[in-house]
Image 1 (cartoon, rainbow, N blue to C red):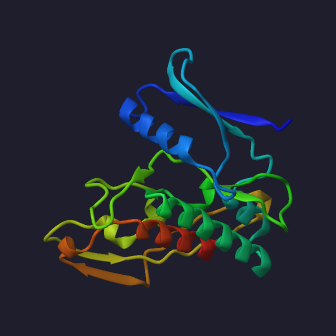
Image 2 (cartoon, rainbow, N blue to C red; image 1 turned 135 degrees about the horizontal axis):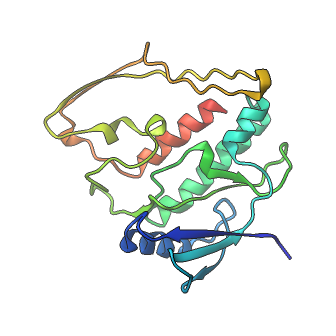
Length: 212
């Protein structure tokens, strides 16, 4: 039998509608590159709303793997890219956008760090979308992995200069994650013709692969 993990949804952290959306999406997932869901517990004690039962990832998450190894070798990085693209292809084909793709949401199902069994998890920000229709009027996701169009505002002028420079300092196992606003300049003018669609997941995945 496999080890299991349980995610309890605490009341008040999100609305019941947001939780039900996450549960609905999780029920529909069935793919080798998506965290396997075993069951959903409808009746749980206070202060929780419901709970998701899933297979336990006995390895680490991708962020910790990068932290422990510094930078991944090319063969492992290719596996990360492939798994991420396969996961997103499955989701987007099903009409689902994850909206929070980042290394912390990719999990290794076992301890093998050379031949990765890696899956995408955490659908708390995921949404079902329609092509050509903006997904939200609020900013969703983790800032350093967000696509530029998420920072939009109709009729607004944006001047954003961003470079992600990751400094790994392993002295005493200390890790510094530094965002250096210095060299890269993105100038966005009048975002009214730009739609935040499923492609925001691709941008976020690209940021994660760059870190790897």
